[in-house]
Every structure is written in structure tokens, then in C-alpha cells.
Amino acid sequence: MSNPSLMIVAGERSGDLYGAELALALRERLPDTKLFGCGGEAMRLAGVDTVVDAHQLTMIGITEVISGLPRAYRAFHALLAEVDRRRPQLAVLIDFPDFNLRLAKQLRKRGIRVVYFVSPQVWAWRKGRLKQLKARIDKMLCIFDFEEAIYREAGIPVQYVGHPLVDLVRPRLTREQFFGEIGLEPSVTTVALLPGSREKEVRHILPTMLEAAHQLSLTHKVQFVVAVAPTLDARWLEKTLLEPYAGRVTVRVATHATYDALAHCEVAIVASGTATIEAALFERPMVVVYRVSALTWLLGGLFVAVPFYSMVNILARKPLVPELIQRDFTPAQVAGRVEYLFDHPQAQQQMARELRALRDHLGPGGAASRAADAVAGMFLKESGVRSQESE
Image (cartoon, rainbow, N blue to C red; front, side):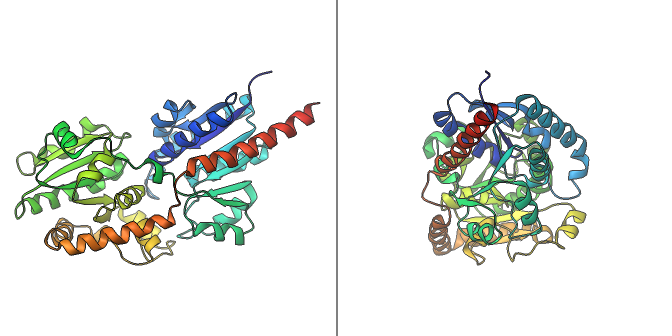
């Protein structure tokens, strides 16, 4: 008899990281189980057979999704073909709701139980997804403390496990080592630029960040480091987006070093998303920015039901960090907000203290372990049911 199998599906950089941590924890609990699904480099290194590469599914916005539909269609059916071939005892779907909710529907038709890890942001928009989730999944594992009550009230089995980033966000190098590697001066004020993890996202965001960097360089002695996500081609970014600023801004690229960049900068300019939580865990004063296409912005405004865009401000329930979104995201605005932090050390200190207080919303650590316990328990129960049915 072949070894039992479990499917894990993640479609974005953050999901790949969480999927990798979950896979490592599951290998300790279910050593004879084959893990397969969709993910990126982190999940592959953790021993998951990624029959679909998550890079094929990288999309942003509403209108931008259209160009990626053929790739998503192929990936969707490739995963279902593997499901039909391997017949996994359980599936774990991580975030990425536009894709994963459709996949959950097909898995349910096949009699495969589904655990959803990292809640879709139903509290922010598209609350109708709660009905879909109730019909298609067997358990929700949420990472923010306030989400548990939402699912319990909706009648969906739920467990709050905490945020995986609490255990992951650690620098690799000292300030001197990191700056020596990338060619910057440890004694100079440094701003980290985190423009996102997807090429289209970076094209929308990084040029404005760099223009703001140029404006800041005219009035302050400051240097910049662009933290390049592993999903991006650093050579493309340097040639296409950084070359025009050669000689105008002291800026370096750091690959696979986001946490070092955040640990050793004084201020960060961060694209709204998971990176804001990473910066918050470092208690790093930040300015949050974002931009999508005009049509995506218009359509999205019809559905969004929260007063803030960054997860940091949503958790704080107030504008703890400045948000410059869409039309407000201009070089002058960004430079002005960063300059204010430079010139008011007490404002930096106050922001850092309030960011530290947000840790209580993210759990004590050990999220991947708790998630693995929940998944392994369901997996073993389902395996036992199947064994009895086959006798």
C-alpha cells in the first residue's frame, strides 16, 4: 500500500513561507506522509512536492487578474489531476482565496476534507465568502486574534493559532556585516524600501519610492536599501528600475535579506501587505504605501469596508503609521512623512512603542506547531475512517 498523502496549496510569497513552516512541523508528526501541492522555493526546501509552482499564480488587484487567468486555469486543473491520482487524506489551503475557494469546492465534491490556514480578509471585504467557507471547508486556522469570533459566529469550526511570522522574523547578520555585504556605511542613516513581492506590484510602487529617496537625499545624509523578495529577479530590478537613479541616490539591493534590511534601518517605506507585519515585529517606524491600476482602485472601493489599508493600523484600530495610498502616494508626500520621522526622534520612539504593543494580537509564537497539531489530528482521524471503510 502506498504512503498516505496530504496536499498543501499556497499561491503567494507569504503563503509559501507559512506552508514551509507547516510542512516542517508536519514531517515531525506524520513522517510517512507524502506532502504535495502548490508552493514556491520555501515549500520545496521543506520537502513539499510542488507539482505547481506558485510563481505561475502571482497576480494583484482586480483587473490585473485577467491576464493571469490562463495560467491559473492550467494550475488549477494540474492540481486536480494530482488530487485524482494521489487521493490525499486531507488538503490544507493557505490564504489566496480567489483560487483556493474554487479549489475547496472541487475538493469537497471529491470527498476530501479541507483545512483553511490564514483567513481570507472577510472582515475587510467580500463578507459573502463566509457562506462559501462554511459550505466548503472543515476547519479554519486563523492567525489574528479578532478573527476567531467572526468564524465562530458564522458556525465555522475555527482555531486561533497565532501568526507564523512571530517565529520567523529574525535578522541573519549584524549591522556591520549586513552593510558590509551590500556596500553601505553602517554609520549613515538608512531607509529600507520594501516595494512588494510581485513584478507588477513593484512596477507600480518602486519608481515613486526611488523618487522620494532622491528628494530626501537632497536635504539629508541618507542611504537606501531595496529589499528584493525571492519571487523577483534582482537583476531585472536593478537594470530596469534602479539604473536611472545611479549617481543621484545611494541605494543598494539586498536579496533574501528583508529581515536584515528591516532590523538595521532607521525607517522603512513599505508596500501594504505582509511586510507591514514584518516591519512591526521589528518595531520599525514606517510609512505604508500602495498603488494599483485606476480601474482596480475604483472597483475595489465599492467593496472595502475598513477604515485603514495596512494590517498594522487595522490591528491598532487607529492610524498608528501613515498610509499613502493611490493618489496620495507621491514622492513629495513620502519624502515629507519620512523627513518628519527623521526630524522628530520622539515620534519614532512613540511609533516603535505602539508597534511593540501589537504583538499581543499576533500570539506568543509557535503558530506553525499549533497549526500542525490541528492538521495532523484531522489527518489521522480521516486516515482512520478510510482504513475502516476499506476493511
